[in-house]
Image (cartoon, rainbow, N blue to C red; front, side, top):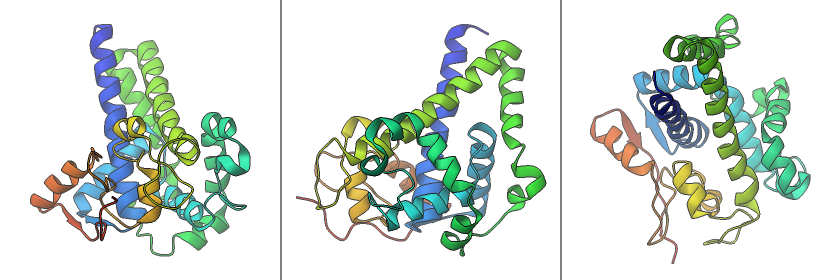
Length: 239
């Protein structure tokens, strides 16, 4: 397979991970802004387990704790606590530290519904399946490089939200988080972080004219297909 198609497929898989993160992990599981069908939930869980190694219950717990202690002591990854560069470059380590704390997971996810992929003998090995898929598609060396590359880009995009979008950007509302349009375009709308912190349970992140939430049309399409149900959107747009 040519280098061009290796790059295209790798970036496509990474981009799918980004959209599944914002729609499934963030807006649905964590904040209940929308409900997804069991089929969509399973597909999202499987994809993220294979290609990011994320365990949804841990992700939900860490993010809910972030909202409770936003930019104060106790926030798992605040740039105001740890520094901008520490979070931008080390967010994955900060996340893993908090995700590995059973007390955090138990306290913040009492409503989590487990599925077969949450079983202990499966969840710790799923990322090896993703690596195997890459190697089967591209060969062992190119597959390894592509798998690591898509993971690194995915981690950096998530780090940019937790770091840059709490320090640099514009604000529609009076909270510490910021909106950064470029990051929003790259992360399925997650860069509208100031909007999200104002209305955390909203299924739509764009809240003023000129803002475009890339994940919102996907959510609307899923709802029209009967695969999702939007529970909440902002009560008012930002001026």
